[in-house]
Length: 130
Image (tube, rainbow, N blue to C red):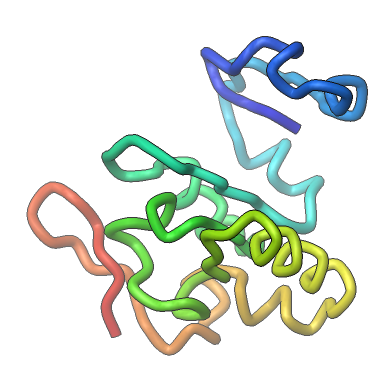
């Protein structure tokens, strides 16, 4: 599933476009998020708070992100989500969550109470703390 008001065109996903559900803008992201087992955030460039990542945390969905994707939210792998920057490691982390349902709770964000930390508001951006 790809949700957002300005997603990349379907051809950007090569041979996988037929396997993707392109939702476009959604009024309430909680409904589509509730249907999925893992949230992936493979951000490689850019800046700013990843609002979709916060929404996945709030929904209790396990998250796999790049370090940049979780910048300002998670400082260490396993703190609020799984972090991986190399494509092979990223894919391994996603597959591991599907293969080990118990790990989903561990990487389900602050709402689960299993991360040992909490989100703190510092200035204009929430930051991971704990």
